[in-house]
Image (tube, rainbow, N blue to C red; front, side, top):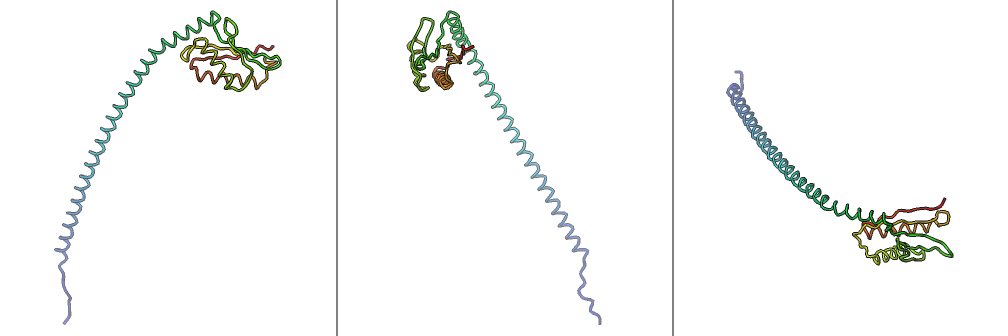
Length: 189
């Protein structure tokens, strides 16, 4: 007697496995579609949010630009009037002159069209700037006035450190008075 073993009918088992495999694949396809749809919705929402932000920022930028242009228009006239006044006064000889001279020591004379307003021995930048500021204040000018200035020196006699110190002092005064403009004139030949 031969033992044939257990005979298993594979066709029914294969049918069940194929049905389960088909069901899993269909389920995965459905989940993929759901995830894809949710991703598209999320992307669309973020795009809409970004477009709204860009629109808001553009509107805010336009408002700031308009305000800036209005500010320039309002203040351009004031600045133009102040500059024109300074130019008219310059044409009439109104200008502060810083004149560097030497006798035994170096001196800085501060002059305007009427004559000497003050003078100082050459010291530190702060001391010279303080003297220039004091003369400007005594002239009735304030930090909003346009002040034209010329630093005049003889380059063949002036020491480089003295010219540099006075130039630095003029820069200090320029930071104190926003509309303080100083030019440097070397009168040597």
